[in-house]
Amino acid sequence: MTSRNRWLVVVIFALAMAWVESAVVFYLRTMLNRIDPYQPYPLPLLHGFGTAELVRELATLIMLSAVGWLAGTSVRTRFSYFVIAFGVWDLGYYAFLKVLTGWPHSLLDWDILFLLPLPWWGPVLAPALIAVLMILFGTLVTQTGPRRVPAWPRQTVWCLSAAGALLALYVFMADALRVAPQGAKALRHLLPESFDWPLFLVAIALMAIPVAALGRQLSAMQSAAPELDVRLWLNHFERNRENRPEPDWAAPIRVRPDALPAVIRSLEQFQLGDGGGPASLIAVNAGRFRNRTPELRAIVNHWFREEEGHARLLGCAVDRLGGRRIDSHWSFTAFCLCRKWLGVRFELQILTLTELVSTAYYRVLQRHVGDEPIMAMCGLILRDEAGHVAFHRDRLAAEGCSPRGLVGELWRTQFWVCGHIAATVLWISHRACLTGIGGSRTEYYQEVRRELRRFMGALAADARKRIVRSGRGVWPRDGRRDLVNERKPMPAV
Ligand SMILES: [Fe+2]
Ligand SMILES: [Fe+2]
Image (cartoon, rainbow, N blue to C red):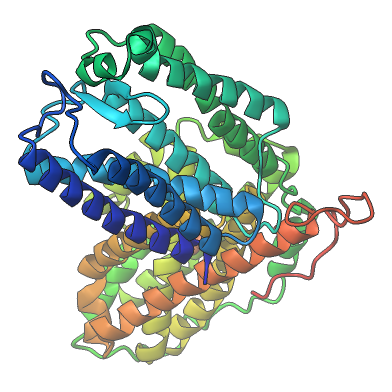
């Protein structure tokens, strides 16, 4: 089972258990007329209930630990799945209790959190914050890539966190500790009046240190990801300039006459969109990516030079079919505005997606158009786009991006959704052309999905290989974190 599925199963179990817990509390509190626990004599003496309650709390902890034990494969992951289960169970308990009873009315309502060794009192928000930290911690440990040895905070971090936990316990039991010398009766009648938020915030800050330490550790691992192999890409772009036979533009036109106007309109738009606009990254912060190294700037220049080549080829096709080269279109203007103002990361993603969905377009066009020069042009563009897509995959993997694990799953979902939006925008503008020459919507979307799937699959495999190579996935047996700079074969283009 993948770690993501383990995580899901643990969460589903914890939610189901939370319902059982809230249902039991709902029955008990209804019988005792104490839906809101903060009322006079909050812990009435009832024969046998006390022991049953204490054992039930213990049983709950045993059940959550058992699930953590089953889900994890090492002490660290077992503990992490346990804290995920605990956090989800705790948050789910309050959520379901709200559904069943209408309580808590607010996150600041008082609740009795636990009974051992003395009653713990606190506003609902306090345990909820701890539960969120638990879920975050467990998720970071279990869901951040295919590491055999997960990221883990150092001992000093644990000591600080333990100090925070003790401090939080003190805050929860401060009033109980104060009245404890007066005996059990006083404890049963205790109703705290104020919660020591400043001290609790110190406690929660200390308890958050392992999460922050993990975040730092993981981002350091990401930035330590092997650099992009720039030489490989410079060689690729150099080699790709060779052996590019020009389509025979003088050949007779073989496009179906009824589809010709739509084909011309489509190629006119592509001539503008595919390299006919600004031949560079145009995001306001584009320099952050392009100027990382002179080699990267050279690669970006090569990439856009090829895009300009596409505009030239498409321009020849438009001229040959009797169309006119356009220099503006509303969809292209909107596209450029998004690229400019949403930042370079988004621009790179939008360009990657455009290349993936354009690949689907050129494939369908090449398959059905029936016109030799246009088919040859599609062949040249598809060859370049395969290289561009492989470059994007490589740079994403070098940045530590992986579609694996829960965080990767979120990234994959947004990539998939944005890909489908891009594909649909393209389909709306070019449907007439593709259906006119005999293509279909199903065929086009099949191509789109195949491209997206391939990209994700290759990225996952690439990211995995890099982690293993850099030694991040395993304890380095011989003390070397070797093979970081290992050469790899040219990507298939
Ligand atoms: Fe292109
Ligand atoms: Fe491209």
